[in-house]
Image (cartoon, rainbow, N blue to C red; front, top):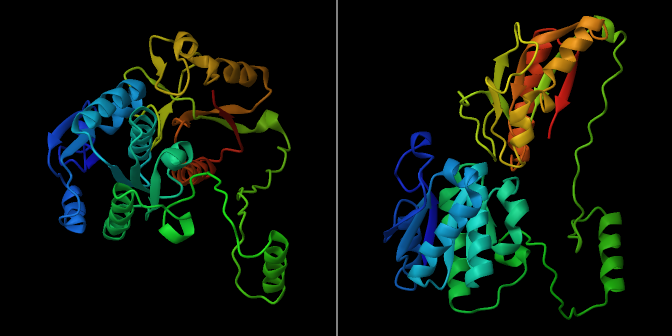
Length: 344
């Protein structure tokens, strides 16, 4: 087997080593030792491939290609990725590695992700992702389940449905013969539901957040209005190192005295769209010039003197919800009455 890790779990460093390009080392590293213990003499991790989270996020195609080449050189029967828990950039990298391995090498991949990790939603069809906790505290639970699945795949055994095998749904349908017809099964579920007994649906429906809209502003001409963007517009040089995708943080910057975003002073770090036009005129994503014009015309009371920024592509729902709560509270504390939220 070959194991893919990020720079942290490969024991190379934290954010200071996040720009590390793909590399490989013989044998096990970090979590690989726990897998080796689970495998015993049934399997061996011969190579560990690793890459910095920021490097992978900013060079997805290049990093994926290099990692696949490093994996192919070891000729594994199964590839392990992670577990990445709810780490967005790491989860996206694990998913991209799984995609490359599945499509180019036709080798099965086993990983571990928290269900809200964006890597699961984007790459779930390319790997058997075991459900994990949101952080590395779930390592002890994740490793045995991943190891069991990896051994079954290595032996060529048939993998059952997610509920039986313990992996997250892959979005795949597989025909099978059931002992009873769909009509009988449906009626049985309905009766259990009416009786208040537990039942399991055969077709779970997606869940969507429902957020009630805010009330209209009584007078926009008197309102304090803020700008918030997930389009990645930051001061030149990206001082807070907002990642290009799968953001784990946001930042805020002063707009005091700023009437227009000069391309000499601002840029986008968003990795999900062509940055050419945003870098030529950052106001296209963060419309400070238009907001100042509205302020001057009296269409809004005044523009809040700071803006908040992150990137939206690949960012987990959990992180996005946390950002929103913290940003909203900060704006509310400063008396902001309305927000213009811009994306790409």
